Length: 199
Ligand SMILES: O=C([C@H](O)CO)[C@H](O)[C@H](O)COP(=O)(O)O
Image 1: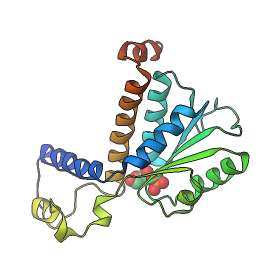
Image 2 (image 1 turned 30 degrees about the vertical axis):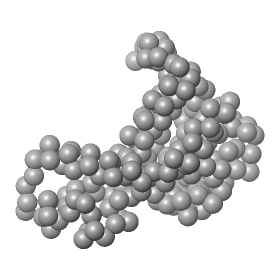
Image 3 (image 1 turned 30 degrees about the horizontal axis):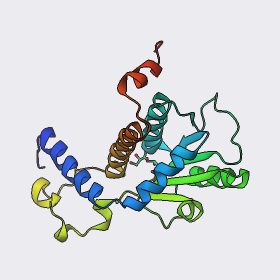
Image 4 (image 1 turned 135 degrees about the vertical axis):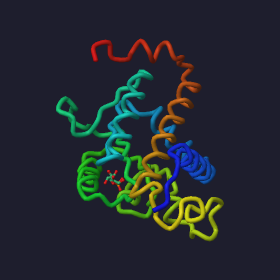
C-alpha cells in the first residue's frame, strides 16, 4: 500500500479547494449573500458532516450579530413565514433533509441550498443555490490538473465520501462570513464580544 505524508494530503486538499473556488458562480454567491442580509432569522441545517459545517456557519452568523438557529437543536424556535433556511447537502438527496425542507417550504420559509447537486429535489424548490462542485465526481481522472492516481497511487485514500464537498463548503461558508464582515463593517472585536463566555 502507498504511504503518503499527511502534509502532502493537506496540500492536495488545498489545491482541490482552490480549483473548486474557481468554479463557484459570482451570481450564485451574490444571491446567497442578499438572502442572508435580508433575512430576519436564519435557520441552518445539514446531516452528518454537512451538519457540522452548518453548525459552524450558524455560530459565525451569531457572532456577526445575525439571528441564527440550528435546525434540530432543543431550543430552536418555530419557523415562521419568510424565515431563511440554509441547507448544506452535498448530494441534495439526504431523505431526512428533504422532508424538513418540504415542511419548511409549506410554512413559507425561503430555502438556500449549498450543494454539489443543484438538480436535486431540494435544488428545485430553493430560492438560491450555490453549487460547490464535487471535483472528484465531476471531472474525469485524465483531465484533472492534479491526478490523485499519480500522486497517491491506485489505492484511493484521498478525500473519501463527501470530504471534498464538506471541506470546500466549510471554506466557502467562512469566506461568506468574511464578506459579510466587510459589507456590514463588523470588526473582529464585535465577533469576539458575542462569543460564548461560558463554554
Ligand atoms: O456525514 C456525511 C458523510 O460522512 C459523507 O462524507 C454527510 O455529510 C452526510 O451523510 C450528509 O450527506 P449530504 O446531505 O449529501 O451532504
